[in-house]
Length: 569
Image 1 (cartoon, helix red, strand yellow):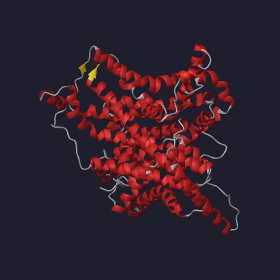
Image 2: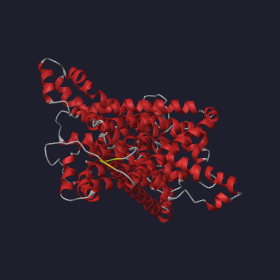
Image 3: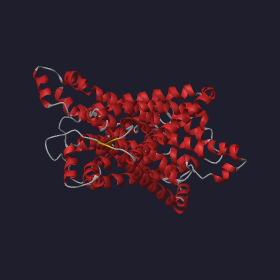
Image 4: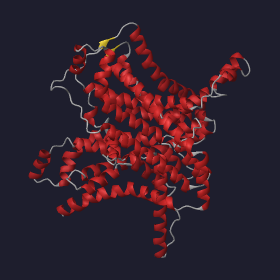
């Protein structure tokens, strides 16, 4: 029985997880050939009039957000790690706060404030005369403004990973550069930036992935991207086939980015120059340099978190009764139940996948294991279409089987159900708990397991008494991360949720789309407050130099590493 479990049971878990992720993608690729004359006409129209705008805007948005986030994150991480100025200790925590703000909520806040007829323009009209505010105001719904808003919410990924890398570096490195006559700027450019390159590249790729997955910001700013084109083709043009083609284009773009990242990384390795490690000694800034450093860090915190949070508080306080009347409590319970179910499901599958992959396996099962964790690299809109095609096929097969048995089956049991939405969350975020468990299992030495087995412990007892206690912190943090990401997820939720049902994220989006964002402000505020939990946790771990040990900070890095395994060497 033990041999059967080791050789078939554990590998069966890997195969099951790979089927959960892989079959939707196979169905989506296979559905491209099934087209109708109407689909061909719609596709011809898209090719002639829209596809160029979709591609150019998508690439410009990804490049702009990635570049600006890199500048913001690296600059802040360098300032608070290498220098001391008034407020630097506070900024080590505060600069992570925008991570709790979903980009689409920040976009809705700023469009509600700054757009023509918004609150600021209305205040200007009331203060200076009729239409005076409209005459001097500007158009907020532009590509540069969208890049700025997304960078303000995504730069914390760069800040967190780069600062963690700086904390791990020895002061001897910077001291050697100073000894050779490098000033502060040359020391950063010639010594610091090359050493930070691995963390910076991974962080920028994560930012670009989040940008390509976004739908709320491009919807708020009315930008033609591949993601908005998928929704337009499906919901407005009633052509699922065209939506599938656009989804495949977006998926190819993601794989190309992963390929470029792997090519840029190559076989480079970065090691400390010596076995000694000296703690970083920060330089005290004074005068103009201290003022500029403070203002730069403060501006990111204010515009990325404080101002949107204050606006949400004000709107929620003035619209709480209307929000409760519109079903705020029910939508909140839906979000909590779905996110909790997704967190438990993803952690359970991630644990089983990592545990099953621990014994040595052949190349086939290693490939299946990587396929099972590729969901994080797939944009939500692409994954939603793939899951709909796959679940539709499952429903048809199920109904055919019930009809053959003489039973009357439900027409759609899986499509348009809450179970389908939880399935989507688990597939998309499975790489996060898998990365945490895999990192935790790497700290369990073979001697521990051998000693337990020598004393007569079964494989189950080894897992329960050795593996689980050591992995409990990693499992908790991974579950929290999946929970928060599921609460914030918008593209996947919009397409997979049951009809006439909403979560907090879709409820906020619907009211913001109808120019009534204030009504859904309590829901947006709740999403932000839930997102603050892992941010505080992450900040404490980076400050205590325990982020890497806990597996928290490396979850998304591991997810990127596993999906990157498909890029050709």
